[in-house]
Length: 633
Image (cartoon, rainbow, N blue to C red):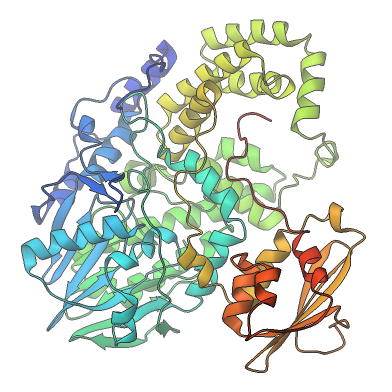
């Protein structure tokens, strides 16, 4: 489906604003187009990538419509970016370095060694990764995988690993490189708040939206996320410091650790013998997120800028090409230095100017409205807010330093959304009056205000069909005018769900592989997050796990908190039940794949005390909702 049947045309105010974008920026600059198509070798013959059941997880031709002129229902700048991102195939980046682009949200980079290949980042799912590797081999021969490298801890850079290498191959000596702290952050991010993140990612990437001029046109960083099997093979080689040098299959690599930038664990890679620099996701052809709209830890633009300066000092002077795990490369040493310097200045400016204004007393919302980039940065296409935005990134900087509270005591103890909405609507004269005035604002082109005010009616009365329709119409117009791909997707997804109901969560990154990679400490923490606190206020249950290797773990549910203590020190209460078992059995119980009754029946398990107490403890755990409401209460 290329178009939503009920999507409406652009209002005059939006079509006019989009037309003005063409006059504002240098659309006749074709350097990005040349760089994006440089080294093209070919693409896959079969356009649809399917899983083992025949379900489509990626369609290479889904964005063919971008080859046409931009309609007035899309921002021309975003259309340009999406057209560049949608180019798919195998590209030669430098001698012996290739990229498969357009097969997922991210890129796969392949570096040829003496005998085999090094695979840098494995896309989001096994199916797209296998298809990308097959495309490379169809042009360059069936070379074995000599090593896998994860540049950072986001799922679209490790999730497809099982389409590239097997557990047996890794056990047999194929190394998997990752920056220090990778595994901890990769699994915790996708488990602790994974349900909420994945649900919100459905809005951010718009994977469930129809593709087309009135639907999803891309996400700025890439087109969208694939929907296949997400896996994880833990790394076997830790990169622990900048300057660390490793040689695999004759390929020499020098690493730069960049923790706290685009990911909590991230690294750049220099190939001195190829004069090539992999910038991971630290320098891409857009303004990136300081706080991604799906939710994550706030990133630090100050250290991000400093690591970009360090990368320039360490590597740029000896790099003829810089490439990243998204978008297309930058060629030529002068261009590489200019590109990295402008990216550095971009994050530094947002950081420093947000701090300047917040110290003058401006709030995050006020700073976001006032922030403007210097003209030289605004003119550079790669600084545009296709994925992150100046607006929500400045709010992220504010949040990093001052938190959610803007200092106004009137905002300290506001009513929650539904209660506030009911009071607002009553104060404004009732739903009919609010909608009458909102329709006038819609006619005036003030769609931002319509969305803000009609949201109150929807939350006060979610069954009000007139309010839902008007809210959907306003969000749709805001989407049509957005240069930012993720803002467009959020607006259009809101309109879609108001009209049709929830789409759920198309891509779940907390896959069995990711969950299995949790350390025991992380697994105990993950259970504590699931405790239904109010229902557990009066519970007092202690379980001691004695592992057959001698390690002891004690869990106590008390005051609605499930604490975990290693060993039997003063913090470990006397147990109601003790269970002696192997770590694999403990993991099975904690993950819920083995129940207490089944556990008691195993010959390798010894239980003393009241088995019912374990059942009682597990009964206090709730389950997350991957289909929670977003644009309705």
